[in-house]
Length: 251
Ligand SMILES: Nc1nc2c(c(=O)[nH]1)N[C@H]1C(S)=C(S)[C@@H](COP(=O)(O)O)O[C@H]1N2
Ligand SMILES: [Mo]
Image (tube, rainbow, N blue to C red; front, side, top):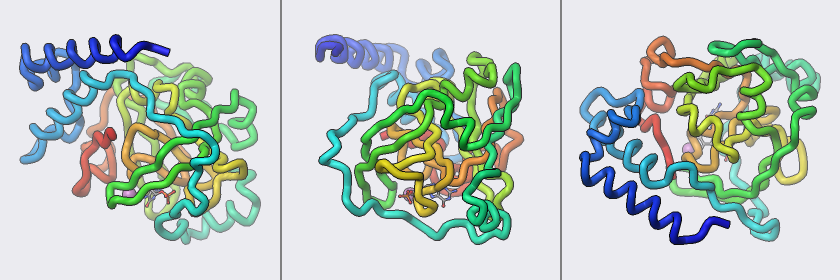
């Protein structure tokens, strides 16, 4: 365990950097400019992202003991009603694939069975929706870092985009490479000791316990490593940010 002192030093130095150079100056110095930095809320978005990154760095989301798992986690929204999704469901998702491409040495397309061969990771963490509800659950899957390593991703790339391109109500989102490589950033296929329920994004879902619910994309089928977000949607790095939400949703 790191001592409280070192964390405090980290925070103090973060504050010093922020105060000394101004958060905006530090933001550009450290490349902490979010893709939704334009528009009237842009400066605020940059301030939040840069300040949060400088202050919290690689901190871990709190993990809970098993007895804290919520007995009835809330599953938001209906599962996809597409023909394609239903046919996958009918075949037990045996043909579900996760593609990994972009700035990678070896583009891959992985089945759930193949993902299950990678080291299994577990976390019992709080899931928080921006609408004000939350629950604690155990999430089981693989580290996104391990998936990126398998594909030989260029770790100097800026972003990892993740999406559901084949579904009718297609969504995409992205994180910076630091968040993608964070040890608690998982591609999950299990929840609370069973398969990931469809209501919670089964068969495959991105889990980022340091970010609000909407970044935790359900029905994941595609991952792309890239330096450039402008070609996705409206270029703000996320379907949510193309709407009214922030690209960075750190909690
Ligand atoms: N594909 C997809 N992923 C999604 C959503 C969605 O509508 N579609 N909703 C998001 C929002 S706003 C929240 S709060 C969480 C809800 O996750 P839960 O139903 O497992 O609690 O999923 C997120 N991921
Ligand atoms: Mo949400």
